[in-house]
Image (spheres, each protein chain N blue to C red):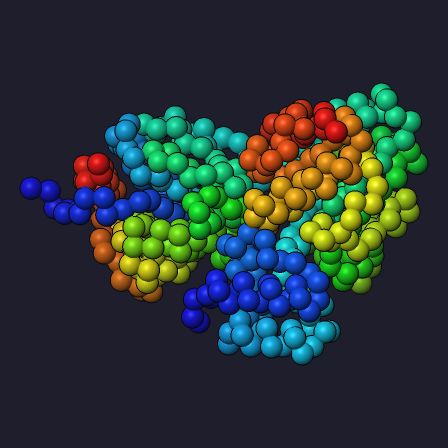
Length: 274
Length: 198
């Protein structure tokens, strides 16, 4: 296949923005191009122009496009040392000053992180003190997150992560096998509100003690990362925590001085200025 | 007279891919680099997905220059040696910054060598040197082709020296390789590149 032309990608994001209001114009080009290439291969479209034509003509296909363009590869307890840090330091520190704890999973994808947090809180006996919102721009992935059904193959990796997290029980205690898939215990998410929300266009809708936005802003360019970070900052209580992916950094962002690094290894930041 | 003739300032960056059996070769190369080697070196080596620590330290100990795992959106600087971190794809953006990805594995790998090579090819065009070392799968072959297509220079470790030769042989089957070299000669080549850089 021919090399994908950046001019075609720009045209596609501009038109998608005009027609549907989703704004991919400031997504990081290298990964965006990779996602588009993947969609061309998947649907056997010969060119970006053909893909764009289909997007314009077919709203239902556009929903599929949204699902495919967003990256939904995630694990439960990804980076176990990070989850230990949340359990042993972040949450106890929040509870020194707050009776309850509000958490936002920004870009929750298929929900593995939401269930990880729920299990962590359950084992700390704090689940009833937590109010949790999990958002994603992709409707269908939110449905998957809500349903909590995962492949058993993925559960093997999740179980390994859970063991390294040093959880109190076995991950198997939190799901049962149904038709060859793992069905997570739905009680774990009875205090979680799953909502459609786009970090790029969406409004600030609440304030939180803890925001998890791990490996989401890597798909944005620096401009967009600046804008999204402003929204996240506005959505945090002073001295609240923001957690990003282990290979992300805020140091190149315009408002990085409004945060301090609490744990550089796990990329845990604290808001220190309004 | 050296066996390699390199135009002054022809190149801007070097990208190296490797997998099973490449550790020895890569450490030989890194330990032989002149301490003032100027071109950035970007390495994508297959590694354990869930072990974040240890690898970059092990490489640094053997290297004449420190090896770093970059952050997303970090600018690529002259004279630095970079390593793709565990469980992330490492790409390069136009504008010469790194871009991480957690998207699907490519050739069963994350980091995938193809992704690092392809994005480097796109960014550096004919000013790139791509080097592919020993390895047991096909990752990197397509990336080497992209480097060649964009006018860059391609080198593979000579298959008879490789512990496992699938990787260089896959690249040789897919595209034109400018030099097939033993590690010793890759080092000589890089020293010539260094001399041609002012």
